Amino acid sequence: MKKIKINKKAQSGGSNWFMISLLAAIAVLVIIFFYLWQAGGLSGFFDITQRGEINLPQRVQTCQFACTSGSYTDYCVINRDIVFNEDKEDSRNGKSYTCYQLEDHSESGLGSCPNINCDVDCVGIEEQECKDTKSCEWDADEGICI
Image (cartoon, one colour):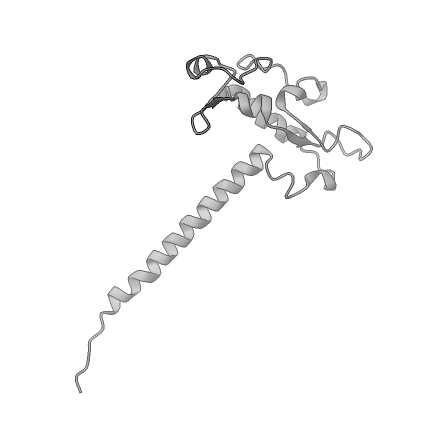
């Protein structure tokens, strides 16, 4: 009977490729989770309002970043659940606010954003005009101004 030699080095390459792929997938999931957490998109999944944890400082920081970066959608459109204080009877706690709406609450410490004008109605604006407006963003996938 003839013995067949097996190249063991060639066989071990598959497990390395699997580990690299697994680590890359985990890294992508961590990045997505972090983005959703910062954007307030996980508030329905991990209902922070039920635990009464104050999240106003984190939300204000997110709003300041949206203002600095000039993101109209993040500042004027996206609603985030806010917990102002530990008082479970406070009617403001657990409600959704845009960054623009938070400007009206003095305890947030969020002043007006000079980079963005939330009073501009971006719906129906043509592409070039939309791109020229600081307060609107062109969604190329949808072909609309938001």
